[in-house]
Length: 81
Image (cartoon, rainbow, N blue to C red):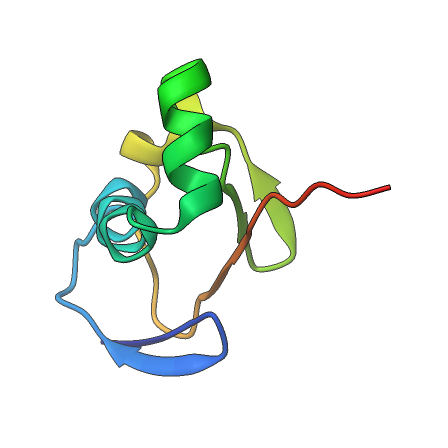
């Protein structure tokens, strides 16, 4: 089944849950210095996931089954002034 992840087409198995993709994305950015710092200070990455234009609460990640054509994006936290 085809979906889009961060603007790139991706093939996933039918029945794949959002949490599986979240875990893949978290593993991909785990060495980013800002993510490392956030995890050390707060215990989590603070990445925000957006599915088909709607922000998904972290507690809903395990319950959402991905569908053909879904568009998943994530927002990376940044700080500045």
